[in-house]
Image (cartoon, rainbow, N blue to C red):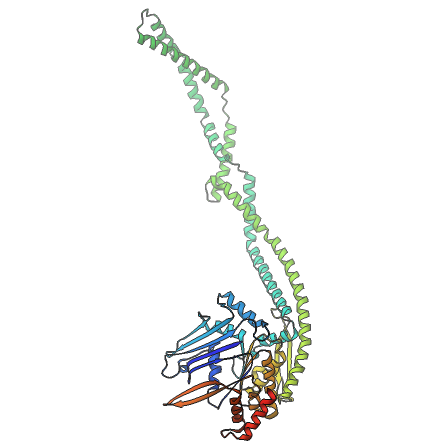
Amino acid sequence: MLVHLSIDNYAIAEHIDAEFSHGMTVLTGETGAGKSILLDALGLALGDRADASSVRAGAERAEIHATFDIGASRAGGRMPGAIAEARKWLESRELLVGDDCLLRRVITAEGRSRGYINGQPATLQDLKALGELLIDIHSQHAHQSLLKTTQQRSLLDAFAGTEALADNVRALAQQHQQCAARIEALSGQRDEQTSRLQLLSYQVDELDRLGLGDNELEQLELEQRQLASSEETLRSSQHALALCREGEINVINILNQALRSLGEIEAKQPALVEAEQMLGSALIQVEEASHELQHHLDQFEPDPERLFEVRSRLDTIYDIARKHRLQAPELLALHRQLREELENASGSGAQIEQLQIELARLRQNYDRASQDLSKRRQQAAGKLQKQVEKQLQALAMGGCKFTVALTGRDSATPHLNGREEIEFLISTNPGSPAQPLHRIASGGELSRISLAIQVITAQTSATPTLVFDEVDVGIGGATAEVVGNLLRELGSRGQVLCVTHQPQVASKGHQHFRVEKTTARQSTRAALRRLEPAEKIEEIARMLGGITITDQSRAHAREMLSFTH
């Protein structure tokens, strides 16, 4: 709830500082004293637009601070749902600081505006979003939440006790939408992938048939080089063998002759002995080489057929590599990549089937939950209509007919808010057609209708602070007293701030503030003062009797306050 409001240099308010508490707080004062300044300033703290003209003349800037208690309610220790939502909102943005929430608005004389939440810069949208969880202003202003169909739906669900069920319907609808979107995306991809799948299947099948093994390419290229050079190898081997031991002149014969020549020397010098030994070793080496050459030639068989096979295999590998515009050694990696892509693409059909099963399950759950929600909403709508009309009669609007319209949606697709649209309709005169609340011309009528609805739904309302701006316009006497009693009843369950001109309403307040306007040295100032019991009597007497306060009006004021307190 709102616990503190500070206003500096706004309009004609130089400085206003007020503490508020649980219950019904009334704000009174002469016409033009500046009661609207308080609500306008509060609206700025809640994200309303501002301009430089709102800054007090001669001041550099205007500042408004509004502090809200967002801990357990000071009246009974319970935490309203909106407060829990506000704490969650702040925590998600790392703005939660203890049990107090400070909204600050600064407007400069040049027209610049800045907002803050718990000392951190904030946008007007943030101030407005958080403010809607903290306070609800009932007046002729356009931002009154009851005019919004979303708020009307929330009020009906709160009255019906179907908030958890409505949340479940919303969650199921969201899941259904997400699942349907995923199926549509996959189906579109599958259509686009049809030609790609055909190409992948052909390419993978071709590489499967190729069956290229690890290191096969290197082995084939080596074998091809060996087979292609077989004739040259044969000729060279035969020539080498002939030089070693065949023909009239060969290495073996020459070495034998050299050894015989050295053997005929009787007295050999050491060098000759060593030379003779080396020639003998060479002869042995040549003879062994000749045996190896002969053995190779005996085993050597040219294989032109195998050469043809190797060349054909290599040609096939090179052709497929060229088709994929890569080098032959990269084919193995490509084969693995294409096979993996084909497996993943082929699995999209199975994934769609699973999603379609899930979609059907979600639809079944949504239908069951939304049917239950619709039934309970319909039952609650009839009860709410009767109770609101009863309150309207007490508020001198007995000719009004209040209707909670539940209109079925045309769309067959699960909707986040259930099967029906919900809107509050009102007929202010017998025989006139029911119209949405926002089309009602009279602000006073709208305020009283809002009051009647809010009284009925107060026990389930999540908003902790309600503000009523002159809900007593156009009424008086007994009806004004009924309005006062209703506002006091609301205040007993939470916090109500009420701007009023009616003494019957003002007398019902748990606390009373008077707005005063003073003029000094050609400067006008608005001030706010909390009234003590004796001062309340004087203010109520003023509201009863006008400028001249008589003993009779004071006695009447005491009587009115005695009935309240």
